[in-house]
Structure formats: structure tokens, C-alpha cells
Length: 387
Image 1 (spheres, rainbow, N blue to C red):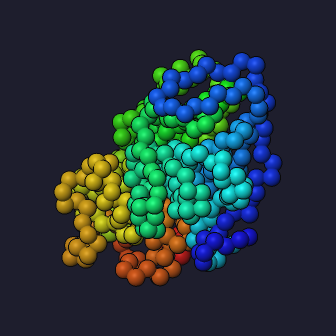
Image 2 (cartoon, helix red, strand yellow):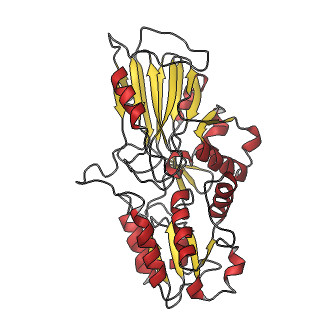
Image 3 (tube, rainbow, N blue to C red):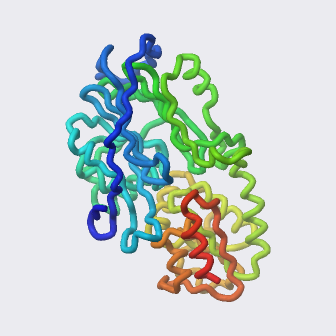
């Protein structure tokens, strides 16, 4: 176990056994190029270097290597487990990338969740490569880099679905998928041995909050072209059934808030903008005001409102200081802690360590996300502390 700084732990996992994919006789047809500097290669092997996110929830990071070129997909964090006292975040082990930094061409981001972007401020200064991200993820990364005083020295590129970028032997096309955050993307990566499709996190939701479903037409086209390797999100794959639409939460949230006798606290992720929108909508419909607590939450909400990702009537979201003047039954507080993260606002509230918030009789506390596999213990501990 190696600590990075005081509160940051780097994963012990090392990419000792990267995966080689043999050259194919019939490579996938080339995608339409929209940028230049593509290097044509016909011989060699594609190496996949999983640096995190396989067999675990968090610190998603995958490197694709062919010859003298490496591209990275995502750079996330994992929240610490109960046996990691004093550690706030866990990041992937990037020793392999540092040893081959002259080959690294770019970091490609699929979406803005922390488990896909949170390691960027800690990895980017060491690699010094450009980052390509969808619009909302781009904004969230800007907020995070600004907090770390790295924004001015970083090269960020905002991407749109359908654009093809070239990085040495790789051609990468972003395509839209549906997830619990706007602007989620999959990436179709043309390599010298064929097409690799990285889905990112996705769900097939036909009534998404942002009204932008998965681009099934593009998926069909990629299938017709031929896919050599599919790297797919598999969260909850061991469970039967299907994932319900995010839209089903609207009425549930509204009912819970309407029936609450006093103050309502809703725990979510700071980057889960669509969920924050749903909570604000439910609060507005039930005549309540909303305050968000925590620096990252406040900064992300401000960014999302400025960029048009949060459409909330004026006066619904108010500063935390304004909430004290309102009756408790007219208030909703949005905070982090839906997964029982030890450093989250709700966890600190549960242990009476939060400076501003104390639980009182009549409060209703909502965990607005299903437990991520492996986090059940931390969530149960938070609930026990609250009781």
C-alpha cells in the first residue's frame, strides 16, 4: 500500500498481466476521418492494460497500447473501504504509464462520474497529456482542476458525439449512451487489428431525464462494420431483470418529500446532476426550498446551472445560510453520502461531526441510489449511526 500525499492512496494492483489480442486477418473497415495524424500499421499486437475498474466498483482506467502508442480510457477514483482509516480516495496504480509516458497520447473520458474522472488531478501532472471529455464531464473536470490549481496548465478538449479523433495508430469515435448523468459516451476505437468498442457506463433507458437516449442507430452501424472486441459495463449483470428508467424516481421522490413531516436530507453524488435535477423538481412541486452542502456539490451545481444542465426555477435552490430562516417542513438538503463514503457529508452528520447539520426529530433521510456492490457495509454503518 502506497500513500500519495496524506489522504490519497494509490491502488496496489499492478498491470503485470496485460492482455494481448492477436492480429486479425480481416480488420474492421476504417471510420470516416475528421482529424489528421493517423498512422497506418498492419502488423503487431494490441495490448489491453486494465489499471482499475475490473472486478471492483471504482477507479476505472483502461490503457490500450499498440506499438509506440497508448491511449487511456477514464481515470477514476474509488472511495475507501472501512479498513482504510485516514484515506479519502484510492487512485489507480499508474507505474506502467509512467514507465511508458512517451507513448501516452491522450486520456479519453466517457462521462463525468467520480469513478471515471476523479483521479485526473492526481495523474495529469505526472503524465501531462491532453484530456478529451464530453461537455458535462469537461465542465466537472474543469471545476476539479480549478480546485487543485491545475486548470491553467492542463489541456482539455470538449467533444461532441460523432467526432473522430486520431492518436497515432488509434482512431476514436465517441457515441452517445444513456446513463444516470448527461453526456455519457461510449467510444469506438479503430485499431490496426480491428474495432474495439468501449461502452462506458450505460443503461437502455427510453425515458431518460435529459431526453437523450442511447444512439442505437450508431450501435447498429458499428455492429455492421464489425467489432473485434467489446468492453462492456457489467454492473449488476449477475442480477435478473432490467434496470428501471430514471423517470420512475420522479414520483417516488415527490411522494417522500410531500409526506415528510419535517426537513428532508437527500444523499447523492456530487457529480450526479440528473439526480439533483429530480430532487429540485420534487422540492419545487411540494413547495420546498433546496440547499446543497459541501464544496464540490456547490461548485458542481453552480457549473451545471451555468451550462444549462440544471433547469431549476429561480429561488428554488437557495444558499445554505438562507435555509435557517425557513420552517423545517419547507426545506430539502442535498448532500453527498449515498454510498456511505466515510468522508461524505451524510457520514459526518451520522457521527455528529458535521459543523452545520445535526439530525433532529422529524427529519427524513433519503439514500437516493441503490448500494453499489461492496458498499453495503459502509451504508449500513451510516444508517446505524443515524439511528
